[in-house]
Image (cartoon, rainbow, N blue to C red; front, side, top):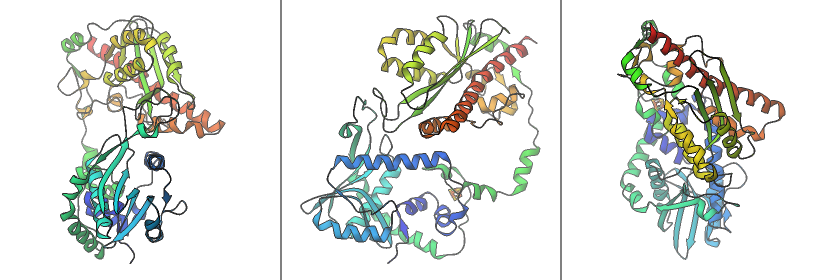
Amino acid sequence: MYPILSKTTYMCGLQCQKRLFLHKKHPSWANPEDEETQSIFQAGTDVGVLAQQLFPGGVNAQEGERWHNQVTAKRTAELIPNHEVIYEAAFIYNEVVCGVDILVRKGHEYYAFEVKSSASVKPQHIEDAALQYYVLSNVGINVVDFSIVFLNTHYVKIGDLSIKDLFKAESVLERILDKQDFIGNNISTFKKLLRQNQIPDIEMGSHCNTPYACNFSNYCSSLIPQEEEEIEEFIELDASITIDKDTWLDYTKDWEYPMYFFDFETVTYGVPIFDFSKPYQKIAFQYSLHVQFEPNGELIHLEYLGDGVCDPRLDLVHQMIRDLGSSGSIVTWNMTFEMGVIKNLANDFPEFEEELNAIYNRIVDLMPPFRPGRAIYSEAFRGSYSLKNVLPIMVPELSYKDLTIQEGGTASILYGQMKDLDVLENEQLRKDLLEYCHLDTLAMVKIWEKVMETGRK
Ligand code: SF4
C-alpha cells in the first residue's frame, strides 16, 4: 500500500495540521527555497553520510541519489536477513514510511541510530525517533535501543577528522517508549485530515516557527485581511528621538578616542574543516573597522576578508592586532558577540593571548542605550534595538535596502559557498560582503555622531 505519511509529514502535522494539509495537497504554495534552507539540508545529508563511518561495512538500502519509499522498503526487506549494518533502511506500517539512518543487527536484536547535524538532542528529535520506533516495532524489528547521533561540540579537529570523536550518541529509548500510546492516534487524526478537502482554519502564531520555520508562511500571511495591514501602514509613528543626556553621558563617560567602530562576520561549520576548530565554532572570516581619532574628525576605514578557502583566523588576528592599535575604545553593537569571537581566537592562538585580551578589555557596546527604558527613545523603534531597526530612524539617509547582502546570516552562508565560485562570481561576492560589513560599522559611526549632535542641542 502506498504510504500516506512519512517522518517529514508527521512532523509537519505535529507542528500545525494546516502545514501538513498544505504540504500534501498544495506543495506549490510553499515559500521558494532560500539559500539557508538548502544549505541546512545539504549539511544534514553530509553529516549523515559521515556518521555511517561509525559503523563501517554496511550496505545502503537507498539506491541512487533519490529516495523512493517503496523501492527502499522492498530493498531493506531483502537486505535485513543477510546484513548486520544497513544505512538508510526504510519500513512501512499503517501507511507511514520511515527511514532509519543506521540500523545495526546483533543476533536477533537491533540498534537504531538517527543522525542529526545539531549539537544536542532536541525535543523534535524525540518525536521523530518515537515515530520511527513505532513503525519498526510494529513490523517486527526487535529494537532494543534507539540513539540520536549528533555533533560533539567539544571535539577539536587536529589533522584528519576523527569520526568517533566528532559524534556523540545518546539513547532516547525510554523517552520514545513514553510516546508510543499517542502515535497511533496522531496518525489517525492526520489521515482523516488528509481525506478532507477543506484547508484547516488555523491562524498564524508562535507555532509557525516552532520547532521549524514553516515554509507556508508566505501563503498564510497573504490571508491576513488587507485592512489590518493597511491600518498598520497608516499609523504614523513619531520618529522624533528623545535622549536622556545624563544617562547617556554616564554610560559613555569612560569611552576614549581614538574610537574604533568594529564588527565581525563569522561562519560556522557543523563538521569542522580547519585544524584547531570545533563543530559549530564561530570562525571569524571578516571585519570592518572605522577609526575616528577625534570628535567629528576624519574617518579611516580598514577591513579584512578571508578568501573562502584557507583558514582566515591567523591572518585576521595579525591584521586586527595592527589595525586596532593599543589605546582607545572599540565600539561594537552587542558586544557579547565580538567578545565571544575574541575569546575563541585567544583560545585558538594562545601565542596572541595577551594582545587579544587587551583588545577584549577595550570593547564597549553602543546598543544598550537603545533598549526600551534606557537613554535613547523613539516611538519608531517599536521596542526593537537591533542595528538594522535603529539605523533608519537615527540616520534615514543610510540603508541596508539597496545592498545585495542585508544581514549577517546571509553573509555567513554565502562565505561558506565562496570556495565553489568562479572568478567573476567570487569577485562579486567579495564586493557584496565588503559593502555589507562596511555599512555595519559606518552605521555605528553615524548613530554615534547623531546622538552626540542631538545631545548637544
Ligand atoms: S504558517 Fe503557521 S499557520 Fe500557516 S501552515 Fe505554517 S504553521 Fe500553520
